[in-house]
Image 1 (cartoon, rainbow, N blue to C red):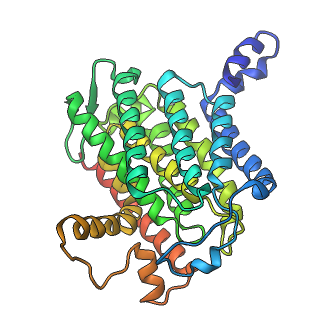
Image 2 (image 1 turned 180 degrees about the vertical axis):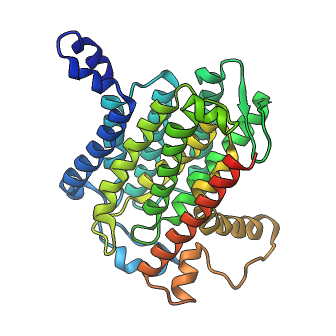
Length: 354
């Protein structure tokens, strides 16, 4: 919206052309998201449900009674910031809207007195993931003749059949949603790890994939709308920092399923838009291990009666707190360090070793 307004103002006020710069719009979206969320989030505490604690979670009593479901606030702020600062295309508008819908399903679960059942939430996740998969396949302009993936260590791209893309996309999105949700158990942990992933994807979209010369030099596909995706990514980066301001240990508010599920969904979408599904390892490897191994453990035990990782508690952050006596701050800092090291290493391997 702002860039379109600027195009009308330029003939009368020359400096308005700055509002058509992607770099300026990225900065405005980031700082606006942070300032708005940092300043206004506490005003909504009284309207949010109270946390009831989680069964089998370490220090669940410490979170009990705190306002939760804050994702309904900061994801809504994210949508508004995108509308104002990002020149949204049809596919981008759909992904932003689906992010909000994913948040809404989590928020309704946060508000529910008894919580929604696992299968009900799984069906809702499946519906949102399938919707996003069809949007990304059929509405993404750079892939008008189909979807192409590029892979680590090889040059060129591979055209992906629609059925394969829908399956891969749905699996990536479902895994990202649920593992991010499982990681939301220590103050600041999930949001900090997601911030690292968002920062990496923002740089990739704006500086690498969105820049024709750099993409050509690194032998990766150029995304003509990479810069506009970067604006959206940094809008979420800003509002998430504003939330983290209040969620840092000891937290005053929790994002709940409303926040964690929407964040996981959005990260998964950005990985798919990049054209390389393996980038999920760069953005979310610690999240996948922390939450995903627990999901695998439950799945194998429930459906196949196979017991694995019997001596390891999941999510892994609970194991570190109970069995290794790590404090919440130690969990946050050490997981963050590991994710930064992994992200930097995978970034170098995927973009330079080709």
